[in-house]
Length: 109
Image (tube, rainbow, N blue to C red; front, side, top):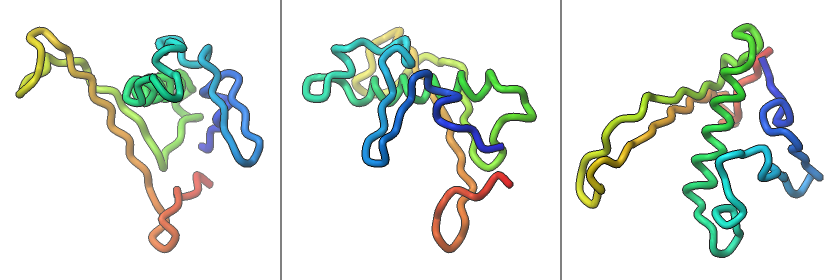
């Protein structure tokens, strides 16, 4: 099932050149984190992924896309070099079925 961006991101707009996702559509993101020059692109990305996941899973199972999926793993204790003890790690998995010739998202039809 094809889902429109405005079904997931409240207030989403597009003018053919730019897309806009209002801060209110990403409730965990602050204006400082989203600032174009001093913000944190990784936090912006994480918040978009989190909203994408929660929006898609809120849809009825029969209304969810089948050619593209997003899953969110349970948080785990982060390990490895440069990791602060007690830090949690959150993973997301996105999958996309692509057409073999154009490498575009396969039609949900």
